[in-house]
Image 1 (cartoon, rainbow, N blue to C red):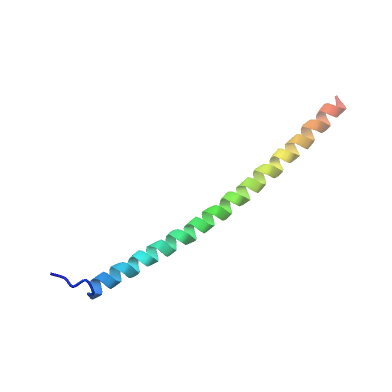
Image 2 (image 1 turned 135 degrees about the vertical axis):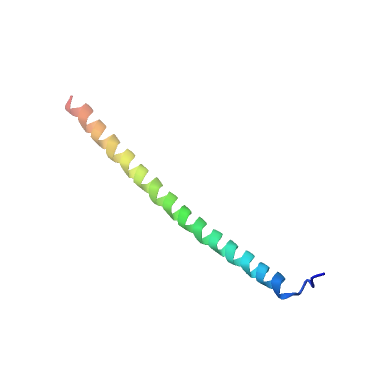
Length: 59
């Protein structure tokens, strides 16, 4: 029977911490990408609104 303080358990714990760290990094990148996409969509909506208003005024 394996000892709970054996080397294999420590390496599994280290692997789990590494996996969690990779998850945190990928989540930060996704959050940054989502913010950038939201800003781009907001700017596109404003530009479309201005163009639409300008076209309506010239009508």
